[in-house]
Image 1: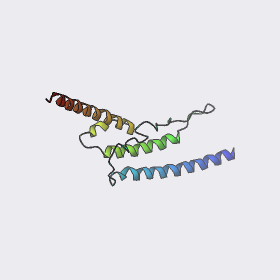
Image 2: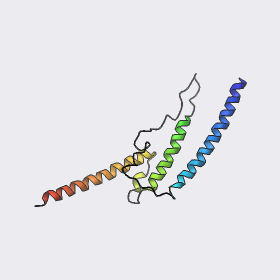
Image 3: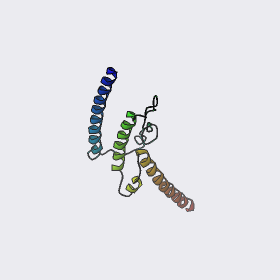
Image 4: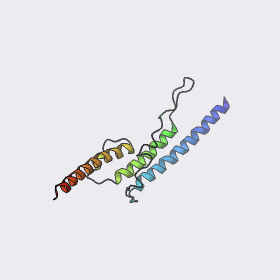
Length: 137
């Protein structure tokens, strides 16, 4: 029993230290977009968060022996990384499309909203151009 409480205390200290470090790192990274001017291209837009390759882990670990479910540390880490990415993504938007990010909770939702909206505009412009080309004699 004493070993369990010692391990629990060690885990609490370790988790608190990690959480504190992660929070300060996220704070630093979330303001980094003001100093970095990286533009999205066809080579870098498929980041694993926005393309769905790295989905959110479950927020809670499965309950064991009737205990209540514990928070999943992987979810907390994923959430912090997604927030940083979302901040960088939103900072790269022009005022014309900024409204597409409103109400979105994840970087993937922001990306999907932008992609759907801008893709439909591009298709409409392409169809208009095609119509003009076909009408040329």
